[in-house]
Length: 280
Image (cartoon, rainbow, N blue to C red; front, side):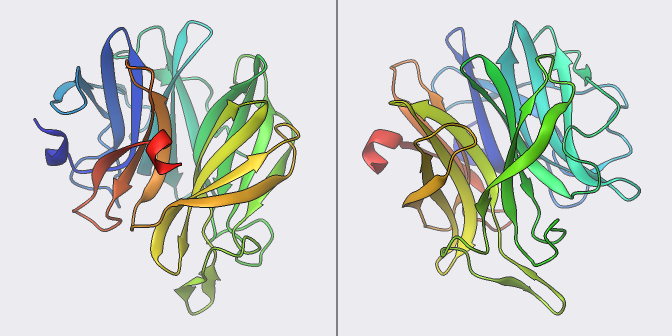
């Protein structure tokens, strides 16, 4: 099937051995059950085939809102990170692991990797100077600050990725960003900060994240010049045409590519790809 035929939110592209693997919040029920966790494969990022379903046991059967799956290779194993919700547990992120990228993913632990009771989503793995870190969103509907501040946090992880080390540190405040606009109604109002993606560049750490601003859904770039736990300074709005929840990958030509979904309304969402060089 063609890329534009795949209904997808939160697209994630994993490149290995001459092939591109695509996953995301796919399927017919993105807002209730959530992603069907189908993995697509392509050689040219234009034509895709369904390869498999990544989780085939019942480890996620009691969860809803299975969103934003990410696939990472770390120390010769493949890790699948998904956001999920269960009434008795709230919202959090789960890590699954496999020896292969396309089969037999099992829960790494029986608990959320994100802090208990925080209401978290969009966790991503960032390996920097051989240390693993988890960056994630504390959702604006259940902020730990109790003031509508949807925020991004980061924490060091144990080497085996089974738990966080120390207290997570807030690196982005939606409320204080000067970019996000307040959304919601009644007593549930707040500011969005979600969909983080980090990479190192020229000794600095680049953080791409999404929010809702005056023009709708967008991607923002912030930069830390003093490490993972440094101050992430606003650099620019990277994309503000009703699209977001991005990630980056390097294609087989050596070009860094930005993937996001656009528009931000169901069921019209599709993966859009942009050269980061061309976006500046």
